[in-house]
Length: 337
Image (cartoon, rainbow, N blue to C red):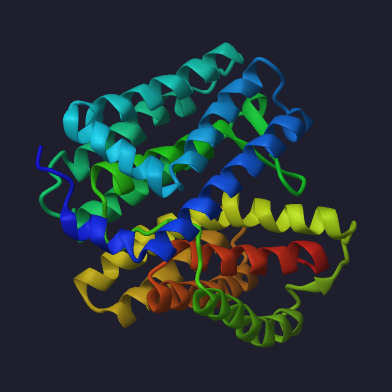
């Protein structure tokens, strides 16, 4: 296996100030969030010892957002190339074992673990000399989405803000980060959490513009209604953290980091932005396949355009994730379908 590509490392390095900021923010978010998960995780459907499976996966996800952990993981994989295959295989076995231990009887879910992880690993290959082709990125996105869709009620964990995640989405995030940050470090797949003032401004500015357009439209088509769920500042801040980390980061990795990026490389950034947003909207519209929600699809497409624009202007998935989390926060706290 070739050494870690210097251009990717340089692109993700930046100045000493930037590296320090990314490191401090990454470690702080990881430490605080793991503590919150440990304290509130049992509020979900899962109980000890099954809760430990979720905590391990969530901790791995958060650590892989820290630059030092990313660098160390790349170094280890460079020295031991077989880990590029063994780690995804171990993650699939991890999910299957956890599901069996809690008494899962869904053969579909059990098969999705090895099929999704294996397909994503196979299509991305083991070479690090060249970035995966757009077609491979799209297939990998579908495979990772399959793992994300595994939902076991006995393997849920409460995340900050009163939401719940199952083990499948958590493992899918870890697998995506391992494959696209560690094994195949894409220049465009920047998940560092430290954001400069300009990047924060662009993310929040996009949220403001989207709100001015989408909220009146949502009320006009009957999709939105005012439903305040404000429970205080602490709950509000925790919910914003949970939505940004556990909804914004994973969905932006999938839709902007792989799907939009693939379409942009096939055609152009503008086409990639539009097509990625349309896919984002369609998947939300058909969230319940037998009852398509056109209003949801239209507003999700508009939101996708905003997130994709932020991603293009900043090059940071975390900036798009912040915009995503803020929009979901406004919707979940004050508006409702």
